[in-house]
Length: 177
Image (cartoon, rainbow, N blue to C red; front, side, top):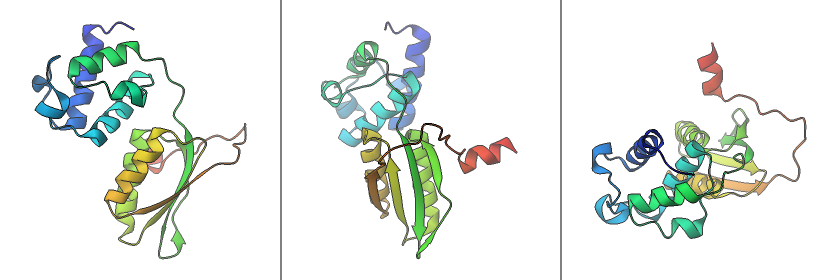
């Protein structure tokens, strides 16, 4: 994949948003860890956001080679096209009562929703997550929830029915009204 100017501008916006910097601060020679203070978790979350946005798969091995924004562009340009994010079901349990189950692709957007809903559920919330496969996004979800003091139990779904269709998230239902 060759990255054209329009595509690169989109990647630049994603990087700026994920790292909380201005797009004007991002140039090919800018060091992500040194100049933009991106730690290893930031880079994993950035890779996941870019995987979702660009439709590619960035291996941990390749991500470890990234030091500059230019390196990141090279990794994206040579990354294989990805498969769909893993399907997952999750529910938030608080004070022994389960809130509505959610199901669908476990992508960075869904992880953000999960973190926000768990935060709103209160200090004793617990998340039960069942995923079709244990991708890096599951680890990110677990770390982000743990950082908020939310415990998570994760298990691999034994099998997923072929005809199963994910239900829309609450946000999607509310936007549809």
